[in-house]
Length: 463
View (cartoon, rainbow, N blue to C red):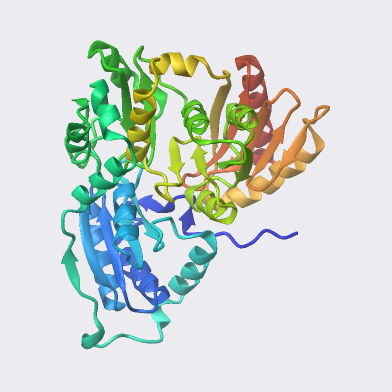
């Protein structure tokens, strides 16, 4: 069976590239015009941006493109991904445009197009939009002055978002515990949300990299190796836990009171245990750890795999009516409250969870099955990824099988083994890389699988 078309410009998380080289004002203008045509040249689109260099420039270009296509623009300014999605859905907008490079370095940027639900544009619609973009110079109609969209500033969008976050938790229970939490928003879009949110919840917030600025004070991707200093401060400041987001705050990592950065998959399993019941459905991409499988089995919940990336995750959530979803990148979907991943929503859900437990976060984490995940990458130019994956597939089909192993090929090549370990080889949707991931109950097993996987990739690239 042939694979359905995948978008070229849109990766697993919108459009990304080097600011003013790949992602230019002209691209923002024209893609926004196409989005306006896609929305039939009427309605309202919410616009937001992050704090990185060029985001304001690209936002102005996007606003112009939308208005020229007949869409009215409500500008929410600097706002987290979850905040713009909340505004889009709550204010019944027809869509959203967010200018953000998310977790990528400050010299890169991009933009995310949202549906009226506040979720990323599905792949099928992204493909259609890309076709229109390829023909943008031949647009059938240029609107007259009387059909141009209006431009207005949103009325207190951050306050609206904070209220939605408070409504998604139990403020009185949280306030009663008087938590002390170190928060690190990477000098990004959440800087002006955390302080007032924590104040409302009676949480003593300890700031780190918490002033908005174009170049952040730490590496933009919230991964354990980038948070050594942040983890040290959690212990030094005697916090109940710490958290760190990327620039647009869709991703979040948690640090327990001992300074241990908890793996994203472990946190996903912790949340899953609190949300899922017998008969529930959980969605996760194919690169999630076996710990989630164990938790779903214990709860009597059904676990469904999907391709990596927010569009695929949301598509599967909606298809199955899922109750919860998580991604190994530190993205968590509390479907009852939001159809998108939101780091700040995850933060209040963690406060909720701890407010009803006598145990510390470290004690809760220690009660879960322990898995080791090894994640490595091999450089591969964007234009060479498809050919490389075909060569990798040929080697994969000949080698590496064990008794009881099974393959899953919905996104790259994944082989699961009888001991609950797995190996995954897939092309990155956002960077010029082939990803080589393994998950197992021991480090030796995970490292051995990754070593074989990297060898397969190396041989394919040499051939």
